[in-house]
Image (cartoon, rainbow, N blue to C red):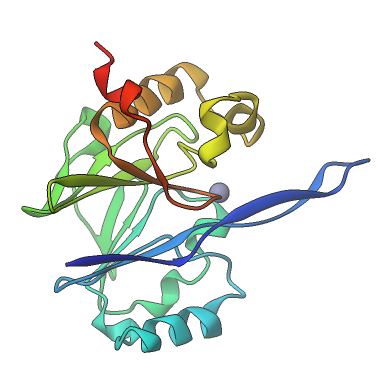
Length: 203
Ligand SMILES: [Zn+2]
């Protein structure tokens, strides 16, 4: 399997007087099989998402799992493209009109896709956030959505708190968990970054 960030996310204030922002999420492909897409940007991004998949030899119907790290509009906009996939949107797991009761993320359970990929609950930004954990060549990649806004928020927590946190205590706890276990983080609104080694030593 191969991880490719199709579009790195961003967020910037465009009108300082009223804090209006321009933002879109990071969109990531794990090319398999199984093929997995994580976060589908806004509802206006369909054509560019289809084109990016084509460049990787895939069409939307080739995607087996669609995972949205949480339910905000800039992370779910093109879910409709993926008609053949199982959809995991935050804690909700569905295919067409069927909703699956297991695993139960609210009980801390994990959705194991295979030896290399699983989805784990990491609430905080919203109360139903999930993170995709991808293992390859002894390295751990965490696709976290807005649990991490960008690399800079490691040193300046006003960035992730300012981006909206439904439960700061929970978010801090799950950030810490991911920093301990991941070698690379793909954050919700910034480029992939390597986790500084000091975080792996936390007790
Ligand atoms: Zn977001």
